[in-house]
Length: 121
Image (cartoon, rainbow, N blue to C red; front, side):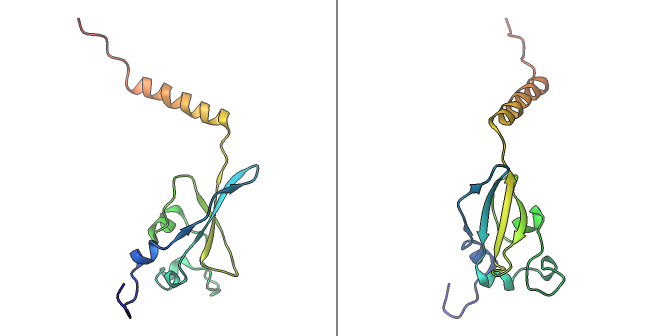
C-alpha cells in the first residue's frame, strides 16, 4: 500500500486473524480478530442499534460479506465488548458416531441418486 493511501476492504480482509480452535463438551470455538481500521468500512446496519459501536450478531452471509472466510457450520454468537473488533464464533461438536451416520446417509443417498449401471455385454 502506498504511503498516505487508505487500505481497501479487500486489503484489510487479508489481515484478518483467525485463532486456533478450542472446545468444550458441546462446541468448537474460535475468535476472529478484524483489523481495527476495518470497522470504519463495515456498513452501519451491521452495528448494534444502541450506538455502542459494537457489531450486532451477524448472519453467515453478513460475516462472509465483510471478508471473514471459514468452513461451513460456524455461527457468530458474541462480540467481545471491550474489543469490538474481536468476533467469537462457535459450531456444534460432532461425535464420531454422528459422522458415521452422516457418511452412511450420504452413501445411501448417492446410491439412490446414481444407481449402478448394469454391465454391458
